[in-house]
Image (tube, rainbow, N blue to C red):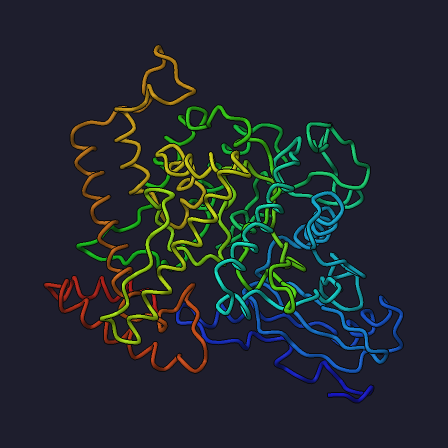
Length: 533
């Protein structure tokens, strides 16, 4: 593919999702990850953007879930990355326009090594390429995924320290509104749009706040909804808009297949009316759930997907972070809505009880495989504890978020954000329990009664639903453990594992039917709700 006459458009694989297969709704998942456009024209735009005569080679990176990315090499030796969003990437125009402005802001204001953009387009229909795109610099260094497992503990701690410094920069800036960041020319900003850096208000003519581009505003068909998408001047307005969005999604859209919990006669059956009831209760209590600590509630810009392929380091000096990529859908939310812990730590999500380091395991009587697993578990645990210790010392506001995210109040806010997909049984159970601790919420004074009355029958029904939902999620957890690396995370599996994954899921389905289905009718219900193709 080195000839200047190459017709890039003739290679079908450039436009399709080719990284693997989907075990859930495969045809639909592939359709929304295929995009046709004029790649020849995009190559010309890329060459022109860096002053080269022509592009001589294009290599497609492994597909992401929302975008295509290509490494384009020019005749003068320059290399650039071209990124094209798939149909499922977000709201047209806004998603790309916000990503470009956010990367620029991250570099200029947040002191973060985000890619520099050479050319971009957020209006697919009016551009000869026929798609939205971003042409940006190729990030220096290598993905952290290539070196992390080879690093010694002190080197890993140096990377954590560098990440802590970056997050301190992000914490130094707050905003006047909740939403997403744009250039002033791309949206109609609200009155008074500004940001605050180190306590000083900045009225920047270049950057403004506009509609939210977070994934929860367009996943699972939400992009089709006629809803308010911000920006919002108050946290109450923002959180109420989330409740309204989920209500309209439940009323207007077909729910997606769910692999977070299994459904069936002896398990919980997601229910639209119960979802709507839960959201009505959420709207009544949302003000009471908001913490008083403004450091946790102020609007902040954050990168919530810090996995080890999005962070680049210097291969000669791997303790130095050279770049952070994939700023698509980064948004301005209350700090407590952002993820405080980078995904590259590979922590399982359960909260450690203390910040004490664990002692090195005794390996003397273990097999080689057991030794390897024990050392890996020890390393992951102590690296995570080291991370949290750094956060506690260097970024105490963020550490308070960690503690708030353990509370029932946060649990209710979190579940409301995804009520269309799941969570109503757990939400209602948390709310029943909250009646006993209502007066302990910071926003509640002694004369404010708990706003929801539960009859004994309702409490019993909510407990049954919660137990059934827990059983459904525990069954998923058991299946994930059995399948190990054959589990189709997000419904996706690599090509080489597809047949084995399908066979394993078929065997597990038969086992579940044997264990749980007592009649042909029950068997038919389990079959109907089985989420995998």
